[in-house]
Image (cartoon, rainbow, N blue to C red; front, top):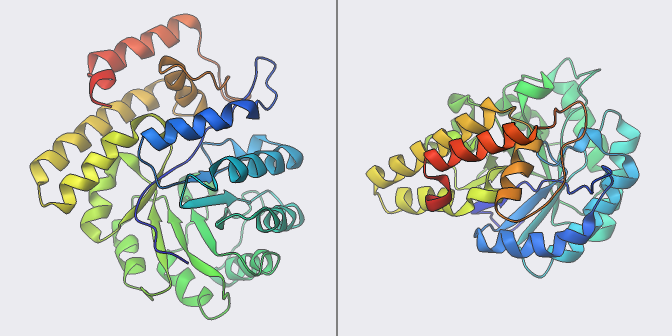
Amino acid sequence: MKKIEGLIAAPLTPFDENGDLNLSVVDEYVKHLEKENVKGVFVCGTTGECSLLTLDERKKTAKKWIQAGKDRFDFIIIQVGCSNLKDTQELARHAESEGATAIGLLPTTYFTPKTVDDLVDYVQLVANSAPNTPLFYYHIPFWTHVTFLMEDFLKAAIPKIPTLAGIKFTSINMFDLGRCLVLDKERIQVLFGGDEILISALAMGACATVGGTYNFAGKLHNRIMDAFNKGDMETARTEQYRSQAMVKIYVKYGGHPGIGKAIMRFLGFDLGHARSPNSRLSESQEAALKEELDEIGFFSWR
């Protein structure tokens, strides 16, 4: 597939006051993300609360983002991973039928693959359900507890899965990241997920990144990439330190999509609240979050 460079945003799934889907805001959301200078979206991932959505909600969300973003973004990647193979295959078929640029794939996280070969077999079964759509395996071991080295996975998977396009690599293991970046460069792409350490991935050779904070700090992270590519490391580090200060506050208040939704409200976008079991910020907590972000200058440099 076309080479991905730059930022891919991981959208928050919008809900109304009753906690139901509110996809009517997606068109304006797309325009907002364009202003953040992102190249595409990674829909129904961790930031999109994928595991808290029903199958029907996943399909409706994917369809809306494809319709709203197809003429505005270069890449629309739909994450299809579920807790079971059959639902995952159904979402993969649906994403392909709707015209997704690619699909992302989380592994199952209760009964998990026990060997690299088990994982390859699972990914192959899903890939076969969308045989004309590139696939990115979603590696996020902190959440999935699937901890195989991605170099080992790629070496085993490349000969068996024709549509395998790469990995969404959300891990702090820079050694494994580097090993993946040198594998089959003409085919395999690595999309780095780690907003707060983006500069580390750029130093290893990454050129594309997927992040939840790009919903509201895309310009900031574009400045990191631009400065790095120009060899201006002082500016790149300064901007990365700002990103880290922001992420530290984000994590302090819960580190889940509800915090991102609160920040989006500060910017004038009401995407509702996160679903249970993620906690809902009280009015005082939300005010304190805004105050702390203001103290680090977020609203002036974001």
